Length: 364
Ligand SMILES: Cc1cc2nc3c(=O)[nH]c(=O)nc-3n(C[C@H](O)[C@H](O)[C@H](O)COP(=O)(O)OP(=O)(O)OC[C@H]3O[C@@H](n4cnc5c(N)ncnc54)[C@H](O)[C@@H]3O)c2cc1C
Image (cartoon, rainbow, N blue to C red; front, top):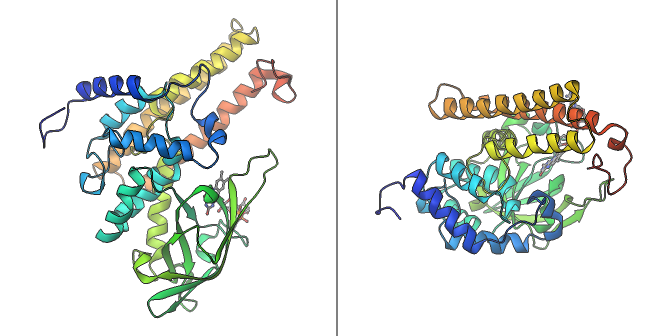
């Protein structure tokens, strides 16, 4: 440990993390990653316990300020911890959107009281958060939303419905964007509320997807009372909060968030994904085919470009060479790269990419 006030050297921190992880965190079974274990921990109970374990050892919220329960460390510390934690079971359900999107938004817009109330609880594993933005009448036109928050004294009375909320059934709090002024131009009549999810006057219904996954939810609000002290940012200035939230979302989805642990992200992911495609090419007997090697090489190069883009954009934003919306480049490139990677995977898998048996190497 470094003396109080000094930032621990990265190599020393990495070694300390490596030793602690080996002693305290359960190892992942061979060939299994944290993402694939999410469904087995449907309500996130195991994740909460693991997050608590990280917290108690001083390895949670590495880049969050110390006054809000974090460790006040740098992106490089987080990167080192992420790389070390890849072989272990980690509470990844906290990563998106709680730690990477909503906690940073709370940090940007919360009052001192809101930050003190929620950030330490999130980092400790006591609160999972979700985002309630989209509505049944359409989500792309976010500023056109119609869930209403009518001011009544010291509270807002909320009525309406949100949909496609990932993981609401297991979460504790939501950032929920509602219309509080019906006469202002649409972007200027919105307010972001902090909403406690499990309480009377909110009904959460799970939605079953075609693949059986039931992570999406729809919520119905029936005269739900939200106290004014739970407004995040200012009344009728919720668009500024939503825009910042979406900036953090783009950064997280593009792989640039420095608030997450334990996912195969950054260089760790690059290694994992390369191995997947190489294994697939080998398992399907195409490892020596020059055309297949060319495709795998293309995927590797795309990953390198993505890593360098993350570095360039996140550093540029931090140094104020780029404006915050430059984070959208990360989201866009991650989507293009992901789509191309899946195309290549499908091409390598051949017919088993469409119909497969359990022992078929191309199935997954
Ligand atoms: C994996 C996943 C997780 C999600 N998690 C959440 C979550 O946690 N919380 C949440 O609030 N939402 C979530 N969403 C919802 C997502 O943000 C919505 O899908 C999005 O807001 C789009 O809304 P919609 O599906 O109603 O489509 P619509 O808005 O109805 O759009 C349908 C189509 O019409 C096009 N379109 C829409 N408006 C226009 C226009 N004016 N001009 C031209 N074309 C237009 C769109 O591009 C799209 O192709 C999630 C979605 C996914 C896929």
